[in-house]
Length: 328
Ligand SMILES: Nc1nc2c(c(=O)[nH]1)N[C@H]1C(S)=C(S)[C@@H](COP(=O)(O)O)O[C@H]1N2
Ligand SMILES: [Mo]
Image (cartoon, rainbow, N blue to C red; front, side, top):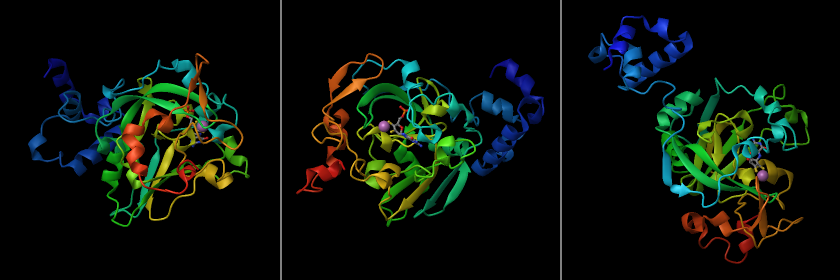
């Protein structure tokens, strides 16, 4: 180990890290069984810095995370400034230009509840949760909004399946319901009481554990900007963008199909399944093509947004008499 680190060993832990991080690490070390005699005499700072154990922030970084080459996007990346300034986040207003307003969202600390049909309900900070879920990776996915604009961006995060495994749902759980924060003093859109706040989304457990379902913590090799759904957002690239709920504060396992935010407002236009399909029009516009953010090019829409190889099997044999049901 480098000599420089040994100097840190002599320092009390509180001298090299802010108190709250120190406490978090200590608590985690104790929980993980690292605070025992085997490590006596080795300063915690040195253990973290030397890579013997992952520091509190290493689990939510470092950025950029290694790219998973299995998910390459298949299109030119959308310019970062487009994807981070043209955003849908109704909590902060119904225009696309809310990114400055969203900076008011405080995401550290960020409490996450995991409850419902699980072996042990738990409430923990997003950082602690991510540390439990393992290392981050980067995946490039296409994103298709139901409004017919699309982008291709590198997300950083972990497979949602890891969260499901961590939560240990019971055998009766069939769905994962996800809910955003509720704080009208931070999010002025939540003062508009004709919306059913907080924003809710849901997946079947089979969808939530599909390899594509992703829990994103960052974008473009950096931690997630508030406007894109910090600190934790869903990314399900075969479904219309409204399914990819931002700033998740609660994961509930249930045997009841959750009613999504947009579904509650208008189930005919924004159904539960919301799988991308060029042949099923939105009642008010065609879904046959989409406009790429950045270039403005129009390109044909693909079934399941081009992810049929990964996800078509999820829906095999469902709704044999009404294929539209898969998309509404
Ligand atoms: N909490 C919350 N999540 C949300 C939304 C929202 O308004 N609130 N909008 C959805 C819609 S319609 C889309 S297209 C995507 C947009 O993600 P982006 O702004 O990062 O492109 O977020 C989805 N997640
Ligand atoms: Mo959207």
